[in-house]
Amino acid sequence: MKFCITEGDYAVRGTVSFKDGAIFTFLGEKEDNCQIRLTSKKTKESILIDVPAEYCRGSLRSVRITGFCPNDYEYDYIIADNCVLDPYARVICGREKWMDFSRKERDYALSGGFLPDEFDWKKDHMPEIKREKLVMYKLHLRGFTMDKGATPKHRGTFCGLMEKLSYLKNLGITSVECMPIYEFEEMTIPPKHKLPDYIKWETQKDDKIAPLEEPEVSKKVNFWGYGPGNYFAVKASYAANPQQASNEFKELVRKMHEMNMEMIMEIYFPEHTNHNLILDVLRFWVLEYHVDGFHLQGDDLPIVSIASDAILSRTKLFYLGFDPHLFSTSRHENLFVYHDEYQYPAKKVLNHMNADMCELIDQQRKQGNNYSYVNYITGNNGFTLNDLFMYNDRHNEANGEGNSDGNPWNFSNNQGVEGPSRKRGVVNARKRQWKNAFIMLLTAQSVPLIWSGDEFRNSQNGNNNAYCQDNEIGWINWKKSASAKRDIDFVTKILEFRRNHPVISSKKPFTFSDYKTAGAPDFSLHGVNAWVTDLNPGNMALGVMYCGAYSGDLEHTEDVYIGYNFFSGTSGLALPKLKKGRKWYLVVDSADMDCDFHDEPLEIKNQQKIELSPLSVCILIGK
Image (cartoon, rainbow, N blue to C red; front, side, top):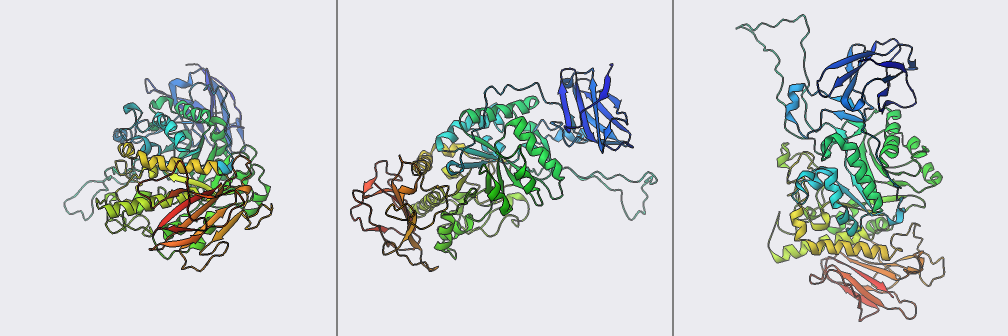
């Protein structure tokens, strides 16, 4: 085979392929002997190509090689006699099958590959959904699609998720957050030990030690995918056709954009990851795959550089916190604070554990001027929402760590029975608490996030750390969704209520004042008496009113009143007097086991006061 070798392009790291060759740009000093090894996919024969030392800028080597078809080859680098996998490889060859134990025979070898032919994005555009309209849904790609609810050949794949998009759209989801979907090692690979050459071991009868034996490969799976990754490559085993993983993911993103939905990627960078690589990774996924946002995980990330980057300036960024200066300079309102701040006050109030209603209300009305927060009660770390009211203690025995892993502080309450129960009182108490949680979450001002399956009370059997559970524990049980239509309908209608009452999700922080002279403050609290409330920590009953005149939408100006009663007994709350011609109507009462949501709101007989059942939440509208 005859190659033409010329100097490459140092501007783009990794490989850029074309019809009859590719450009390779990689880290290698001028003094290093560098070679590119091309391996035929068909014959497995390898060709070594020397990279001339003069093709160097700084610590980068770059060469353009023509005379071969990239689709027929894999590649890696030989640098100073060491075989190196390209950290910028856009395809990883060797992990096409999930948990492929036959890889042991090949010594777990991985190679770089080339992206397939150019994808036709047609007229794709990023939705750029406004922050006040965001509703997020977090899922694990494989766990969400492995159950029998998906087409058999699409289980655990991007195609499987594509089949569920209509379901998510109908639920009211705008943005899907996927746990790691870039290449990562799901298998536990034992370290390979090599004795020095000068040791020639010959076993003797009186030996006190024995030769080191290689441990067996553990079958424990890195199901979630956190840890070091091959950040430029789509995970091949998440594709129905692993050879076309990149195009399959692109089809998923394009379909989401056609449905006005966003793709948010969760990416974990271990500490000390090169900052330049991090920026290159994020730019690459935006430019190559049209990703809409990133939930960034890891310490010591160059968050100021990321948020200030021109390519990422309109990309949604979710992180634990940002430099306050970024909030004032961000032009596109694309910054979102994402941490546990919401879930603990919510759980403590729901389950009567050192609760503080003031703390909860602060979370319900939390909003930034040109940035926002992500609110969630449950996620992959911790109980599902169903299990939060079914188990007092974690049940992680299946993880093989003596039930010592996972968060011990769950603020959960099993309602009197640990695990499943058929007792009507227990079942109803759990259902009411599940409804309370969803009403709270979906009427909080900032961005709500739903953990996958919570909308139909999916269970992990009390496992609150299913990081290694590639089975029914870690998979979403779609069989249950068929019998949970009423639950799904409830969540759908609460989300529809949120959309139709934009004052709840106002992009402006509430001021507790009537700065528009609308007759009521934008946000107000009410207790036994209207406009007056007892804010001591022991008070567990409170009314909140959102004045519809502050909705910013002339078509949706109804007032909204949410009554919370987390006392164990009935509580009365005052209803503020509405402007002339308006009355209060009941939309939701979580204590009503016969009707979850009133499609036709019921007029309240007593327009001055409402009685709330124990441990319940209600929603009223003033119209």
